[in-house]
Length: 122
Image (cartoon, rainbow, N blue to C red; front, side):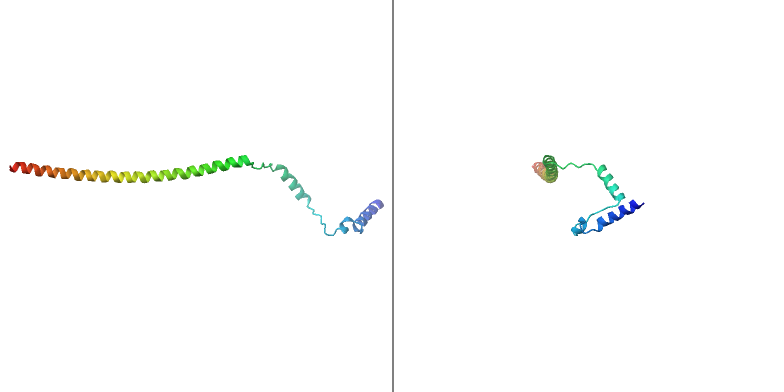
């Protein structure tokens, strides 16, 4: 028992002595953590998968594919809108042509009736 007391007192003297490294560097501070937190950190670092950095080639390919897809998407909808407008204009022209042909048909019909009426008078 006496040896324990002497060992404890020598440890206390080592901590309290001015030659201790903790007293020589007052700005230095040791960071400590509880055993539970230390175990938690140790298990977390083991279970976390190692993440590979995205390489320049792989990042370039992904960027190229995204850019190409965005350009294709924009072009597709631009062409689709142009097609719709052209189709509407063509439909309007077809209806206008149909109306003009109907007017000419009616006019020719009225001229034929007038010619028939003139021939009957003779």
